Image 1 (spheres, rainbow, N blue to C red):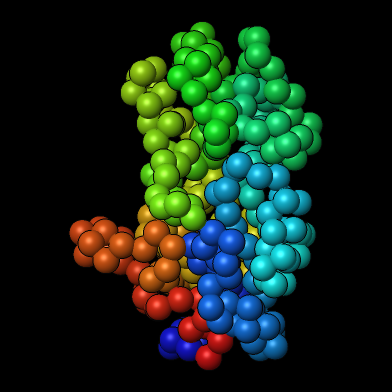
Image 2 (image 1 turned 135 degrees about the vertical axis):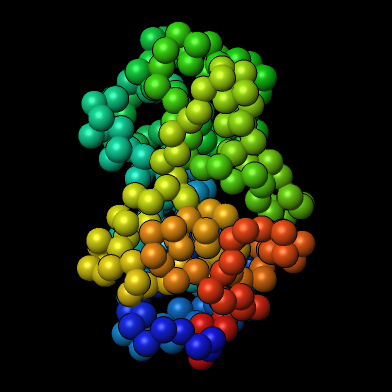
Length: 256
């Protein structure tokens, strides 16, 4: 296990690329999760995945043997729902699969006069038509939110464009900037920290995304751990202004 500050009492962990890749758990990740619990460390799981509802994500993790409780799983759509409801924005046009929209209890998806446009991952449903519809709503004055700014993610067949790429297209076309509701927005990290009852300097964030996982976490005072799995890029690490507190080979290294 890497040397960590003595006051670390909790862990925030990314999922895709950190605990698993494709349909396979990272070697040693299951054992590491058990060891973390044995040492009495609290752990919560954060993901910008917006293509699946929380229940499906939890079910898939269990199939991989990863003991993740659904109550400890923080997804961008669920965190976004709380923000939208607090702002009184219940009529939204969501670039999301129908079952993910259903996860956002209290939010109504509309195709006319939305209060807000919420950009997520529609998977195979993304199209020029879908982007143009959202584009027109934004020109009409709808509030503009995105669930992530990730450029890409690693699927079983290789890297694919992620939500950030589609958000950037709408920003360029509308000359507007979207408000981020997923990682690395500060409130996305604070929600699980509050659940654990910890201050930022008492926890670490571990992930494979240098900007969204490590940089975002460090910005509010978390200890940032980067793994050399998933979308990790040595070239990006060398070029980036984000400097992880520690870089490890994989999540398994936390087993100690």
